[in-house]
Length: 196
Picture (spheres, rainbow, N blue to C red):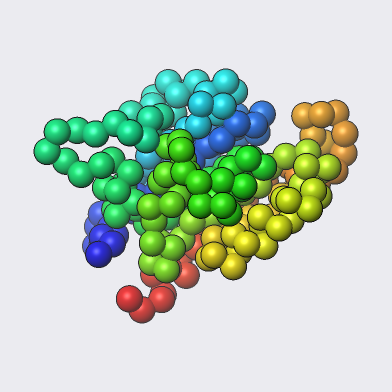
């Protein structure tokens, strides 16, 4: 049974970060969520740590960043099961093309995909914010994976148009932190209004 924060307890928000230059935007979002009283736990893929160091998010949240999906503490259930059970919402952003493929194909070999796969999406929203070059976004495989993920109950935050790291204009930018925050707030409100 999924246990969510109730009463005066702050909701637990899981933030999964994958490899992409847009990972730098997540520091601002995480800081905003923490300042608003949310309990935030960050998980990162190895590729994500090449763009922003885990110490940044550890400092912002006051919590250890989840990097290894296989770490277990004696006497406790597996960390990914525990976090999936207590979470009120998970956001994966930036969500790379590779991560979309992993989740659509049911593969979970890193901390982010394992957490996302462990959540009961009928009770706990999992939002994905794809971020990549427009050509990658338009690939048939990406379109198929996004369609499958929607069907599987994941929420998709549409990428924004604009200047990209590859020095071109196009769709595929990660939305700004305030837009991601609005999507989180809206999903939490919808989740609360759905009878359990």
